[in-house]
Image (cartoon, rainbow over all chains, first blue to last red; front, top):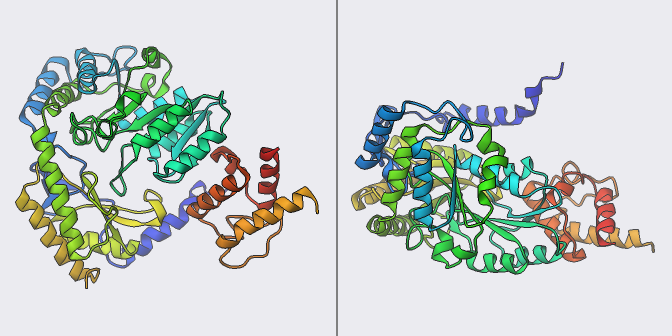
Length: 400
Length: 80
């Protein structure tokens, strides 16, 4: 008998090798208590959270929690059904209304997660004979959406406008084309040149989908994302987003002005063949989205945090993923996985949680300590974070 | 010189900067095992081939191409 698990042996060995050096497993952390959007207890120790994507700190917003509790009491614990059968409650419709208000768009469709939103929309709209043109550093959910569909997939170099243009020109002019971009790329926290890319895609007759998972609520005048910030949101056909970042709950969505968009509810399998989210989650999400529409002060503070941390880390001597702070993500580049894991553990021992990211999730085989800031981080916490980075960097020898 | 040989020579030229170990090239040379390329190298190389021949090699096609000979055949087919 061939053991079907033998293909995972290299990964099992790499993991065992890493743990044999004595570092704690970076992928099995437990938060024993969560005290606020920025503080939790891990391994019995109070820890500043700097790796949660909780950009706007909505997880503990009193209105968000109250709305969820009320819906929990009135509508019960779960939906036990698909959106198209018995799983659409009042608050599922309401959260879709909230999204249409937030983006000023005609249609909104809520999925159970952001992953499923990408999986569903991409695999359904690009079919046999169509082309998907995507950035090589696209998120796994985008690649999985491509794999699930029957379209031809063409990749271009990360954020390279000319590479996109060349490839679009080589495709058959009459073929259906979907260009898939992200506003903020989550590994390095860099922003896409959407202004140029969306224009080029439109000139080539392509439809454009932009995943704004890491920019919603924070980037753009109304927090609609990078496409809004760069003035091209009206030319974007589909925006994909998530509730598990700035909104502070869980769920995914697609908003669009396409006149036939509602047919997606009948043909999109990751929407049809899964259970709808619980009503409490929907009520919390709707409240959070409407509050984010008025979040400009929080957005301003988050930018301050991002700039302070970026400058502080660079001044300490760390190598960062971007030259300038472009989003609420700041990636610290580690020399290799082993030292990355050491540094990650040293930070945790100093009461600071960040994400350890490694290939294949990262570009160019990099090991990263990825920091995501929150609008609820105080200026003092950011200074504290920098002190802990300095201490851990010296303890591990990454800083000299 | 045949057209196929011309294409082979051109592709060999494009492989050269990525051929760190100086592996001798034939139709049977595989990208993953003989040249030991990772996914990033593959991407850079594919982009170079696409630009040189003004073609598109989709990721669907790339999954079927394991060795130099298969690539030459694909390039000739796509360019015709």
